[in-house]
Amino acid sequence: MPRHFPFESGRYETAMGVRALDGPAFVRDGELERYRVAKSASRATTLYHDCSTEVLQHVWSFVRSEVGKAYGLQLAEQYHTGTFESLGGQIAEDLAIVCLENDRDWVAMLDVRLPSGWPPEPQEAPQAPEPQEAPQAPQAPEGKIGRSFAQVHAPVPGMEKLNLAGASIVKMMIEKPAMERAVWGLQFDDQLDKHPARASMTPFDPASPRVVVRHERQIIVGFPRVRAALFIIRLTLHDLVTLSSTQRASLAAALESMWLRQRVYKGVADHFDRIVEHIRQS
Image (cartoon, rainbow, N blue to C red; front, top):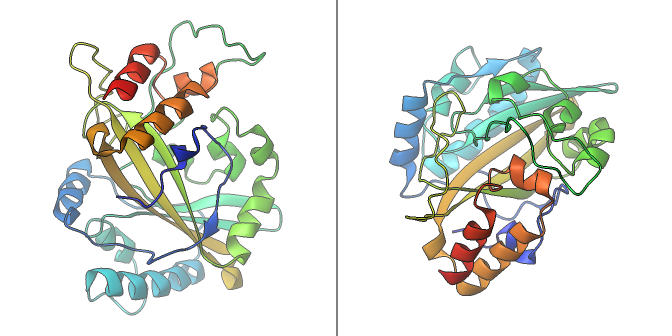
């Protein structure tokens, strides 16, 4: 269980929300086998775009050391073709590398086998109170390889100002000490892999309601020498009944603070009032 959920503020936020890393970068727990099975079933693998061997070697040296501490795995000392591909199926975390060259930033490597899912855009998006068009549906992870920070986050309602400073944000991630942040969403089943091409988008069922918080702990480690940063993404699922009454109240308030576009994007627009009611009454 995370020490802190972002929604405990009672607000839905799209700010970076980073803080100094508190704890290990990788964490092995009793759920490891479940993650390994889900990753194997996903059949996903590592993707690269303009990612140099020098970058991969620097990142691998860090990953090898930290994974060894957390998981006790004996990994190759030097990076070589296949090291990340082999590692991805053995650990719970997903990995991504971003690079920066002058003012250009891009996603250079992805090993994301348990991605979050996104609902399809409705045929006729409901009229939002904000004078903005309904966002395009986000892409699956493989569609993000080679894209900039701004391009990756363009579909996220509320990220517009951050996207304008995309390269500067990547520079900060590279140059600052290791940081962590968290993001969250809701789903209505217990599936770890929510890739839109592999997983069903289970809707909320008012007759048999279930709400699960999908929480991602994201660690950001910079490598200034090679102008790159590593994202370590650890997913955890938390059934509503495991949250305290205070946390459930904060979760309901955070949902109510969303714009309509954000509710559509996060997949909670349908049956929204019933979802909030269920959370408050559980």
